[in-house]
Image (cartoon, rainbow, N blue to C red; front, side):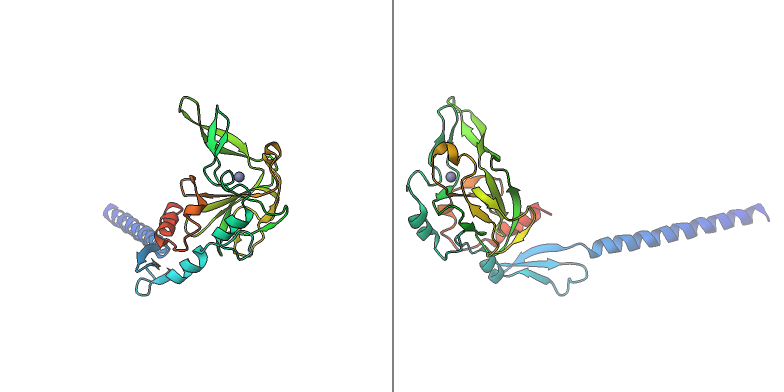
Length: 252
Ligand SMILES: [Zn+2]
């Protein structure tokens, strides 16, 4: 064989290899693109597009969906409205509410939830018809870090004994925390609906030291883990699709 022929064959083989590698690489990229989903928000409806479905977008969530899954209800499934719950189950209309001063002179903080004085071992359920359990503790002495203020005005944090807790995330992007439970029946990551038995109210955590009776401590937290007054949220049934989309984008 003459040398120029060998060179030609080598070049030919190299070209074949380049074409083959490109072919498989393009197929690999194509598969990746097929899995891309674009979420967008049109006329209060969450829509998903993918390269396969761009002509017929998949409608993920309609306002009806949001309305059904973001409508809040009593954690005791007793059909009471939030205002009725407050009337019926609060003992002290000042001290049991959100925002009431707590802690010590050295570490001032606020009560970050509402205390509902239902009988011990009352069953508790999620606040809406869909949620994901984001945290569970079966430890009766479970500690939660909360913010406090030092005498010199410095912001600090302190660990408070919440006892057995269940934390649930709702489609809107807010979470509820139930504390002082006697029993927890769910696991982190579990999907729940309005009828899922989450646990039983009780006396775990710092209730012992406070001398208080058994109650459900209910807290609401936003996506920055900041607590807020449930009275400012649960009274409203209007849902926010926008918050939900923001939440999905954060968790992509
Ligand atoms: Zn409380």
